Image 1 (cartoon, rainbow, N blue to C red):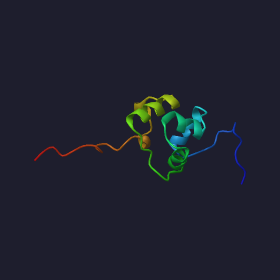
Image 2: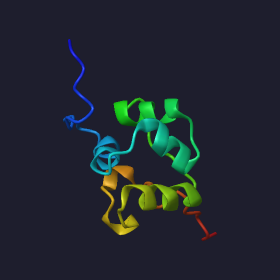
Image 3: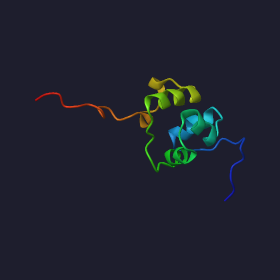
Amino acid sequence: MTRPKKSQLQETNSPFKRLRLNVKLSQEQLAREIGVAVSTIRRWEKGQAEPTMTVAQMKEFCRAVKFKFDDLPNSLLPPKNSDAKNTSK
């Protein structure tokens, strides 16, 4: 199996990878931009781990891929009510 040339856009099911490739960032560049390890980016793109980022990292990710937070694919967003606490007693 041959690797695609760098200038060739690769097809992928990963919205995370698609966003990165659209702005022509390498995994290393994106990892540096958002402050995570390259291996973390690889796992996210392969679907081996869910993308989890701090608010600051998410802001940096949006800036790096030139996307507004509201326009990100739902699969990259945190689940709704993940921090919701039951306040009724």
